[in-house]
Length: 90
Figure 1 (cartoon, helix red, strand yellow):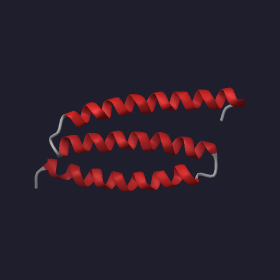
Figure 2: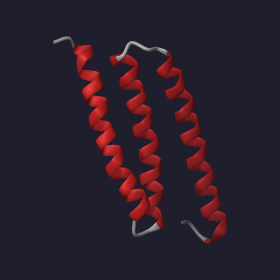
Figure 3: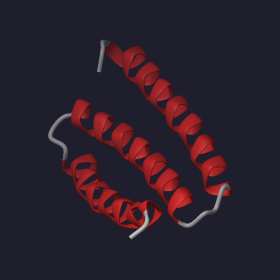
Figure 4: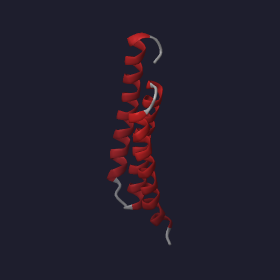
């Protein structure tokens, strides 16, 4: 079995982890839990796209992953700025 054949099952495993993270983002008891789960979910999506890019030999998935990573970073900054301005740190 070639090494590239392991990337698609690894991406499937990350999808299962993303489902569990989504539950934490919805049912998190505190705002910090929800914020961290959404941030990790975005990073997890970038990893899934990168694994699929290598496993399926589709280089344009890496472009999508890069754009999504930049949007995830900007979203984290925006949410952090919003929560600090609202009254205290988170």
